[in-house]
Amino acid sequence: MTLKTLYIVRHGQTDLNKQGIVQGRGINTDLNDEGRNQARQFFEAYKAVRFDKIYISELKRTQQSIQHFIDLGIPYEKLAGLDELAWGIYEGAKSSPETKAAFLQLMRDWVGGNLDSKFDDGESPNEVRLRQIEALSVIMSHTEEQNVLVCMHGRAMRLLLCILTGKPLTEMDSFPHQNLVLYKVTFDGEKYAIESFNNADHLKHN
Image (cartoon, rainbow, N blue to C red; front, side, top):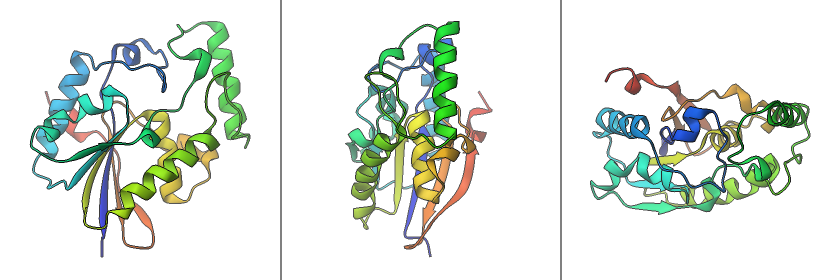
């Protein structure tokens, strides 16, 4: 028996996504034309789902991605725990040999088990995990909400999926994603199960 179904999506494309520039928690960008198109496509594919509640991060690109659902009158709530990981001094930095080397080293740290490693002024996976557990407790406390739409961010989504499935955070990269991709996760009262993995079917038709 499914007690709750979480439709977890990453936000739509922004210009910085398109340019391959990391945004993070500290950069509050808007969707670009492609991102708005992705939002429309997702809405057309899932508007028949009776969502009881929507949860988004405090960054406007998540609200813009699911605004069509909010316009239907579905209640929504912003949770800081759903914000993207803060990349600190590298947020918004143009790609260069230096930045590439820094990110490569950080990813090696994380995969190697150093989950407290972070950039200056940034956050570590362990720090993000703490605020995500807090956000998740809010979402799961509302037992009357059976179908929930959650819009968040790429790296944060990978970490949350580890928490839900019981995987160590070192395996975060086992959850691929692109802009406005869907992970549908069910909860039966004891465990979470991924029913739809990295689903982008709704984005294939213009």
